[in-house]
Image (tube, rainbow over all chains, first blue to last red; front, side, top):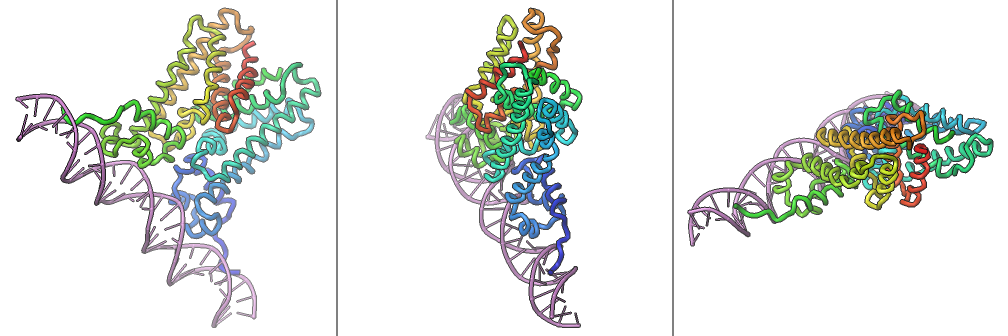
Length: 188
Length: 188
DNA sequence: TGGATTTCTGACCAATCGTTTTGAAAAGAC
DNA sequence: GTCTTTTCAAAACGATTGGTCAGAAATCCA
């Protein structure tokens, strides 16, 4: 009962996410959020609890939106093919301006603490999935002997993070693919 | 003639740099800069031309402070030893909170344009130095046949950028060293 | 149709933002 | 010592910040 909401929560989160993604927490002003989401200040507070709450919700929306990407690392059978597919799936235009979660790392000392733990969970989850695929690859003999899956998983994760930064610096998807092919030599 | 300045420009830049480094451009407020540098608002404007000017100057101060690091890549003879030493020199505590230039990349749309070109120059310079060492290594037969120095240089640069992000996420120097050893398998 | 309930609109809030100004303080020049 | 020049300290600037609130508008239920 009562007056119905005139907005779609997911749509609002999506627009807010894109703005935070591009301009960061401090760099995004409430007036811009009001403008781009079409949501009035009152409802914004009612629904999300202010700028901090909206940032946290937008970040979780971002991370959950990467579910399809992470799902690649859970395809059976686990192994190197998953990792290769995962890398290539990151080369889409969507990440032209970097990664929202990584940007949050940069703003660590400014961002609401809950957002920080969202990022930690996301990065840990990604690394663990990479690791699971590497271990499966090692068991299957896909991986050269003597490789340490833990170090390898962290190394790949570091490369992925750096590649996202390079995208912001103007590296195109085809160029990025060449780097991906290069890093995959570690798996041969 | 006139009243002498009661501050040291380099000292002021150093303190401002550390604050911008940690909190970003938008996240750092003028009142904090005044407090931490000890410089009054008037002199801050007189010397640097405001917040934007101070950010640009602090970033250039940062980059020039990395001169010793980049000099490693210019040691004769050029080759893989330089690259290995360069990677290890990055594992110091100084980069516990990431890299100021890299943070500027993540704040691209908010940061003053002049700062942006400083970052581009720095990253290009680093990549070119890596490339020069890789080419020398290839000529000297240090590098396995069939490797593309250009792609390899960019790949190493991506890894370096990612590793700096991981440091912010709590990866310690010894852990980082293991990743460095792993990435160096690309050079074998 | 007339409450009850909820959202929306738009004005308003104190606080803070980056910036500017003003007058006193500190040095060299004469 | 006085003039000139420059910096310093602090108050004040308008604009904007994130956040709030009272009243109008829109829906459901009776």
